[in-house]
Picture 1 (cartoon, rainbow, N blue to C red):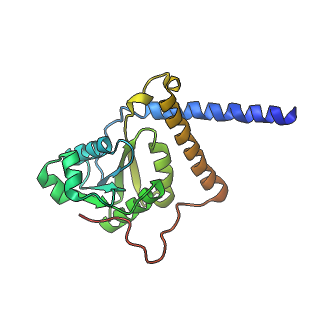
Picture 2: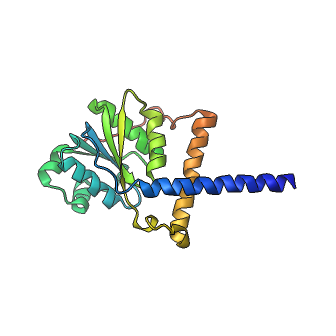
Picture 3: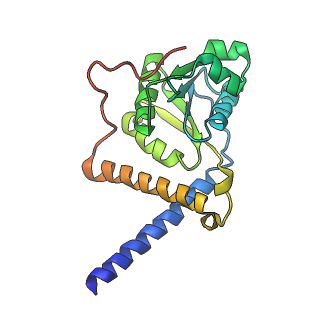
Length: 211
């Protein structure tokens, strides 16, 4: 009986945490316009086109001096990215850097930190989807701590998660649950093990690719 009661308590805590996580995700959009920063970073992944477009809009509005698109597919070219995002040629050619080394959120964090230090940037606006932002910020703050860096968030909405009854859609439920579990895993790593993102292997290529 004690084991069953303990399981039920843990299950209730997990569900309460999931609902709090979902509320945080939903309340993160529409994102308030950020203050100007040294640079803007778009983390690629699901809905990459929307993330890149939002980041380019910030760059075009003068919210940063340069933009890093982190985690670009190695087979993509600069022209491929431009054709998808369709920014002004002058802006794209002068001020957009592509990062090809990140394959996951841990890689995004390392690539972003390397780029910021190379550029000597101290303040960044981070652009990614609403559900990905909490986990992305955990990884970024593990390698880009204050006061060395100041990070702002600019979340891109996921329409299927904006509904107050997102749990009625199997796809939305799966997305929220999977992301919540990943978020908990990072919290456990940071709180229990005290580990930041993995260090790159000796001799590996730089995490950020310049223009």
